[in-house]
Image (cartoon, rainbow, N blue to C red):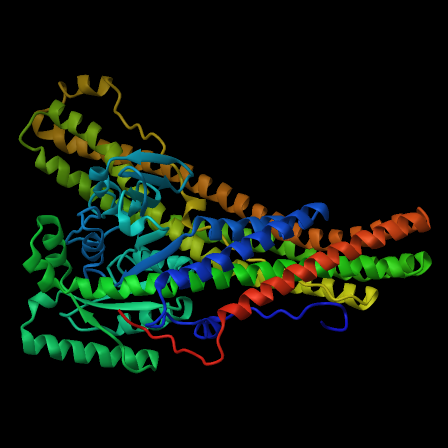
Length: 630
């Protein structure tokens, strides 16, 4: 125990995970599972006790954090995410693992939608939209939502697809995640894969035997390693090569990966996902054997048995220790305040408030800059993009209209008018929805970059509040760092409005008065004017909606980060005022409160010791190297 009464607790890192005991040959798997089950239950018990203390002490931030930690442990979720470049066979590989052709495979790229395959009593799929809606669909309808053919550039506004299957592979909380291919012609696909990395507990990186590993794949492997402690490597499409070519491809790709990760002895298993899927769905043992997928499945089974629990346990343990430390710091602040004379306490509280004047000034300055500068620049950026878009779209729209009129050259003027009436809404809607999706992505990336320094400043202000408190009240406080970034493109998704474009009926009467040789030329000219008028109208509506949402998002962001500073200050002031109130009630009230705080402190210390013992039980003296393998 440190001088201030705190227990020293250390968080576990990826290096510490390497020290967790591997599954030895003479250990029964159930013995290891029982150890992790006991550790998990002890952590959950500690979290429950800490939650009750947080409720007693009215610390809402700790309550919400504990709820999130408990949920992850209790649900036993584990995201095994498949990454790789476009057309390496990721979806086919996942279908082969599942043993069913569930995920679409196509010669065209999939959308930016991430697909999560999880366990369910019945087979079904759910579409989660960017605007918060949820929709149940049939498995046969998946194609319409996650392929560029069925949902080009994600015009339907799909956030993610969840597929529930009654599969033994998924029964214990394992979730298979299919990400869009990086390196395709669609940048939003690459971005979606990068954004899912923080949610990956382990990764499968799919390469192809032909062509060999590319420079962009090497770069992405390095990036994945920064986030994921376990990477499996697959070399797919090996059935396309003969024996000598297969050995050369394996040797080349293995050497490149080892060089990128600075490790030796990478296990790279060659498979054919297509043969594996055919073998499983058709019951063809020869194809299944030729596919070599069983070798990967053995490695995966061993990993899930041996290492999956380690990652979940370490994460829960770290979180519980942080919450215990935060609560103990708050208790120490109150106990320290109880020991001070009320006059001294009042003087220190006034000094604390005086020193917060500068903090509040900086906080207000940040808020003003955020609203006046960032919001203004964002709207200016949007307006510039709209201005650049309009002439380009005008030219394209006129070209498409002219082509349509030329194709309808064989009919009458009335027939052509009917065709134009049907075509105009489609032209406008198609043009705006594509641009809208691209603009939403651009604005989200830009705003994320702009908000990063503001988040850092708020963190610095919170740290400053803690330093002032420590200096004034002579008690150190733990802190939370905020991570207030935008949720992504969904914040900007503009629900499609009904587009209605139609000529007045009186125009059809004029067709009878105009010579036939002039009718189509006249219709094209009138249609072009009407097309642009309607395009301007709907583009303006979309621009206004984007502007409104930009301001709304920034206001919400500012409120959230300001609230974190206010809560930090309020929690310190409340602890001091509570102590002053108790002291004013006399000796009996002070003794009762001191006893209550002592009991709370002892309870947290006991919980922390138990958590430290859990960590000690999971470690060994000799480090064990984490091996990257398939």
